[in-house]
Image (cartoon, rainbow, N blue to C red; front, side, top):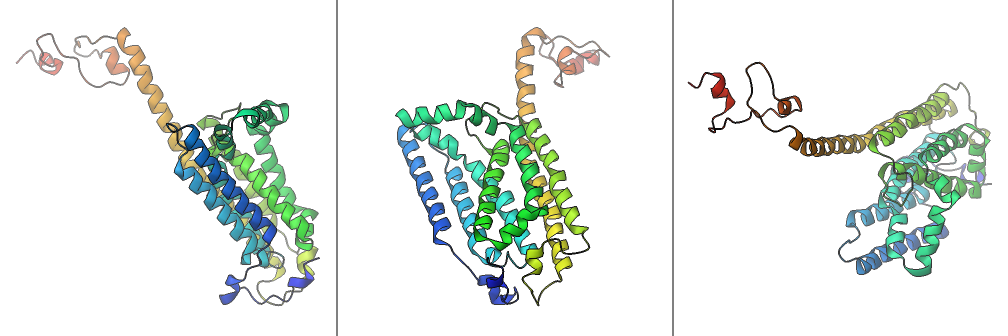
Length: 328
């Protein structure tokens, strides 16, 4: 149990924000994954020199790993067992900041492009398998998100994470995995049978908003401490147990909803651009069927009805505007 070991922590102020408790195993795993990802990007560029791996995706993966290391080794992790709002901030960083960056880096797509031979075939079979297709489905990703967030914050699982270090590490892995599966539907380019179009991605984000809101409002409406492990820490400084609980609820509610709405912006922008490209393509396809004709006064041409406001020219080269004026 770790609650008693951290009960004597000083108030979280000043130099306490510099406290850290790095664990060699998680940090070593993060370092190994970064090295493997960079190696994969270099190998992809050698195998496909005309289709080099985007540098910004590599930067996204490295940034996500750094943020994950910070969230699990800095003061956020040190005080997560005595301050509920700190614990909630850590969770929000993992699932709403680090996970989207991991998803945007698309490590599965990189592995697919950088692998050859048996490894490539094995990866392909895994992606085409029933578990692979199920895990890649948007409904599965949303369902996991809708279950994991309430279970980890409103049940006895939170107590176990506060009391036992192994449960806390499992919780972190659960947030990263669930967040990655959710956000890869929004920002990722991993090989997937179910490629969500922008309207579906926007719908998934809208449906996820009530999940964070429900958890946050539930915590903010409590009138007593619901996690015995935090009460057992016997903290003598900082906010009261109930005030701390309410602060964590507000962080989940407001912080989660704001980050979700910010993620909606690029999705909507992509949606609008895609519709514009579709409209231009439709105009090109319909152009041969609606040749330019002289405009009769009071009767718009088909091109005008399709959204083209350029008036056709008369055989003599004069605009129909002048023709409307009687050739004057």
